Image 1 (tube, rainbow, N blue to C red):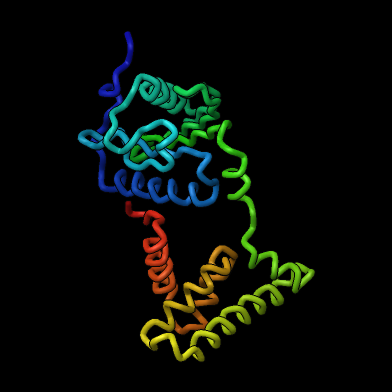
Image 2: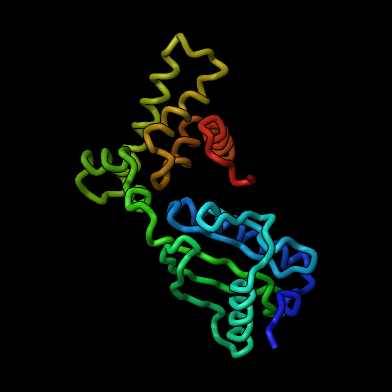
Length: 238
């Protein structure tokens, strides 16, 4: 007898919901790291929940958070649950063909909640036919990191930090001495300038900037988020 998705739905506790929410955040983090060749989906098995809680790069499959489960999803849940019951790690890795004939390498990882029950899964679908440029772009370091390497010629942590401090202070000095920038916009302009240089894409970039400007890390991220919105990039809440 074929299983139905209803056979696996469970009542979620508050702790279970926090766990699923953390995987939605993980979904965004993985997307930022791995790039847009991956479709990443977080599914919930909570009763009354949407089956798709979060999806990035859904244009590959045409799916959105409003879509229901399909038979392939049910099969994945069934296999993950069987692995869990056997005491094995609920992880599946396989290859498949997409609707357009794309070769897809997929990993489905079960999300366990209270009592080690299966409460959802996160799926990473790597579209191997994606343009190589979209893949390599993710692994290309920002120009600022290359500048650090050319200046330091070593892995000396102090030199690394010093270069970031110097860059932030130079940006601060440049903006503060520019009479054409209104005082109330100067901090925002400093952060925009550093963002364009790629400073926030390197280790310690955000924390050192916050220290030099005398603000919190939260404030830096708020300005970065506002810049992303202006530039048409979706925020993590969307």
